[in-house]
Image (tube, rainbow over all chains, first blue to last red):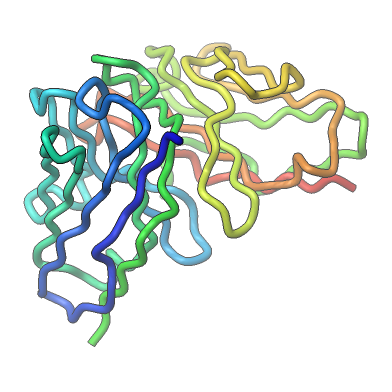
Amino acid sequence: EVQLVESGGGLVQPGRSLRLSCAASGFTFDDYAIHWVRQAPGKGLEWVSGISWNSGVINYADSVKGRFTISRDNAKNSLYLQMNSLRAEDTALYYCAKDISSYGYVGAFDIWGQGTMVTVSS
Amino acid sequence: QSALTQPPSVSGSPGQSVTISCTGTSSDVGSYNRVSWYQQPPGTAPKLMIYEVSNRPSGVPDRFSGSKSGNTASLTISGLQAEDEADYFCISYTSSSTPWVFGGGTKLTVL
């Protein structure tokens, strides 16, 4: 079964850090770009960051640039999001999502995880 | 404020057709065919319905179709069914410093 499973969320104080993980199974992980998308409670979707299959292309939303770092370990079929200097407005359900195009970076997400909740509050 | 504009809500009766618009600019929808649509029922992860303006992933019913004209992309759902009731989001590639932007979402109600 093709699957993405996020972990690492939790309650964190403003200014602190958190590292999210996304474990992939059921497909050739190192053939595909993977993205992070978040959704604040009761709100819409926000694209956060993306990384190409070989880490050659990495992008961030302006709202997280300089604070978040995306990375992947193809040997471990895993994606990560290091989140520093967290703010209340980063509170959201964080999804990892697989790009539909092998060796591409087209921004169409055909497989999603169930999400991991990050709450930034004192 | 979302970069792409969607109507907050649309509705239709079973069997009818509805169209959800996604309006951007010449920096995003108008210049690129990397527009996708997602369906999100309450409490679930989004599901890809249309990609690259008009392509349907395998398993998505052909009642769902996508198109684009100028700076506006559209998702049309024909033969509405109760199970189509959900939030729908568009996303487009953009030449701005944030390469992908979502619309604000549209709540579809099946009457």
